[in-house]
Amino acid sequence: MLTINQLYKSYGNIRALNGISFQLVPGEIFGLIGRNGAGKTTTMRILSGLIPANSGSAIYNNIDLLHNRKLLKQQVGFMPDFFGIYNNLKVHEYMEFFASAHGLYGLKARNRWTELLEMVDLLDYSDSFVEDLSRGMQQRLCLARVMIHSPHFLLLDEPTSGLDPHNRNLLRSILRQFSEEGVAILLSSHNLNELSYICTHIGILQSGKFLLQGSLSDVLRNVNKTNPLSIFVYSGIETAVQILKQHPLVKTISIDQSHIQITFTGNAQDESLLLKQLIDGNVLIQSFHREEGDLDTLFLQLIGEEEEN
Amino acid sequence: MFRNPVYEKEIRSTYRSIRILAIIVIFNIILALVGISRLSYIVNDMHFNGSAEYSAMLQLYIMIATIEFLLLVLIIPGQAAAAISGERERRTLDAMLSTNITPTTLILGKLMASLTTIFLFIISSLPVLSLVFIYGGIQVSDLALLLGYMLFSAIYIGSSSICFSSYFRHTTTSTVISYGFVLFLFIGTLFLNEFPTLFSETTAPTFQTPLSLSSYCLILNPAITFYYIMNRQAGNPDILLELLHYPQFYDSNIIIEYWIQFSIGIQFLIILLFLFFAVRHLKNNFYSGKA
Image (cartoon, rainbow over all chains, first blue to last red; front, side):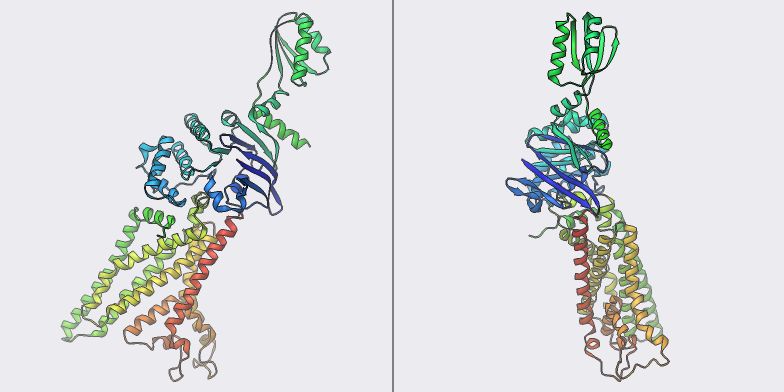
């Protein structure tokens, strides 16, 4: 497990990171969400050893990796948002280069890149030039090369940008595979729904600090609080409306035949009490549920609230 | 065994391209045309006069070697000035430096790759240079010394280009600066040497200062050292004094006496400085997020 504590980073007068802390746990996928300049790339570049933090630590096995760059590079694989490639190398040469960059040579290197190319479905292209691959294939190749030294932590900056749905899907399944093998993954994306498909944990960054972070289910529960409650009534709709109008936590009501949609600001317990009240009032309820929330909604809400503050 | 992944990658990708082969062929065609045409002129002249002019063969040697040297000087900055800036422009620098490759490994790998190319140019030109052995006058050890200095000059100019490539984000800028620096070394130092004589009524130096300080700038100029080595081999060691406008009736000082050793020593120090600053800049600026 990698425990990141109080990371601070400034570029001149601009504070890029304002004391963020989180954990990368083996088998988990942590998604970083934030607008441009929120601090996502800076976090990744610090954790990959490319830039130093002003303060903070990244503890792995009681060792601060930020002060042990050699160990950090052994433990971390980083795929930048612009994953430059060498067009005039063949796929296997590209892999061999990065293997040698991590001190892997000969048969050991060959076995590893063969395994990885097979994993990302590019083994048949090992003799092709990198420039002849499609963008999706190049992205998968980059994913394979960041795994060449079997790191425990994978940092992926916008890994799905510019990919078609097929390749996005393929990349997701590869990441799941890595994750199942015990690799902890930190990834950023502007496509929030994409993150909700794949991530187990989410952190929303704004101006270098987390507005919210936690497991995906916890975070989405947060969204649900602000989503409308949907009630389908079998009979007794007038009574139901009367009860709802009198309830202090109900802000708005809209009715469409037997479907009532309300803005309800209460928590899960308040929801249960409201349901009991409706049943006690002899309203026959067909269904009673919160509309599903999504990360887009949550992100826009949080950013909006932060800006108002 | 020491292995440099950057060097291996560079060699692999450079020699795959037809471009390098084409440049080597053109380079050797130019040398061969000059060499053979000059040789046929000399041979015709011998037939006409009925005697062999050995000095003509030495001139042939000087001519071919000078052209080769100038061609290499033109090629090196074009090769080396994209070393780091090219990686930056391709956006591969992040990926490379997030591995175990250090800025030092990167700089040395790039320099070695450039030198390998230059070495190939030099080796490939040996058949043309060997024309001078037809009638003798030059020994193999002389040729080896000259080619050795050619390679050394390649390191000198290559390290400067790599340093500029580390400092400037764009290859175009680093290439222009690299050629500008070569121009300064070759023409600028000559101008500095001539500068005092332009404003003095007499070209004769004063007794106290037989050589102006600006003349010592020539020690930085690899072309002067190269030219001096060649002319010494051809039996004209006074060429240096002529270049320096140094009156022959003065005792030469230690620097002039050991000009080749001094120039190589100083140029070697400059190479080290260029490499040091290239690595330092990459470390400081890349790892602080400015690169």
